[in-house]
Length: 144
Image (cartoon, rainbow, N blue to C red; front, side, top):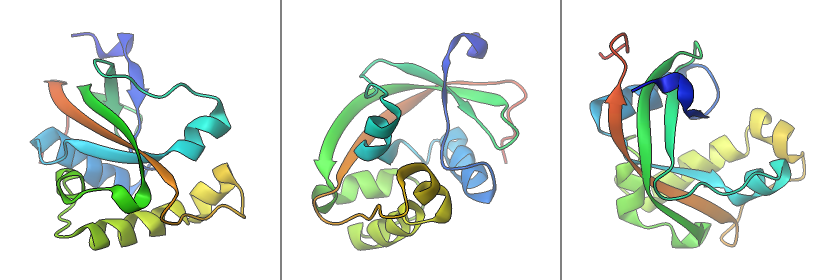
């Protein structure tokens, strides 16, 4: 599989969080992810679609794997379920833990720089909940 032919799948911002998320994808622990609908709307980007394949990039912008979307849902933040939270592969034992972690990220300076200082999340915030499967790992992928 030629990863250069695929659009990019970037998880978080480059740095330690992205490195942890990519490592979880490479081990198969991470099979879901969450984004804000507001981000897609602000960038005028179409939502991802089932069957879409993307190249996962690490913090050094290397294409290390390919994933294929198996489910895309838009749900209220209040309606994110435990299975989705657990499948994010970050060790969440409850939706409350998942939400606290994600709200912290979504209220970070980096996200506010993208969405505006007045952006805030609440129960009604729409989340793009994606489920994916790992379909290819690059030969030189840094698997721990």
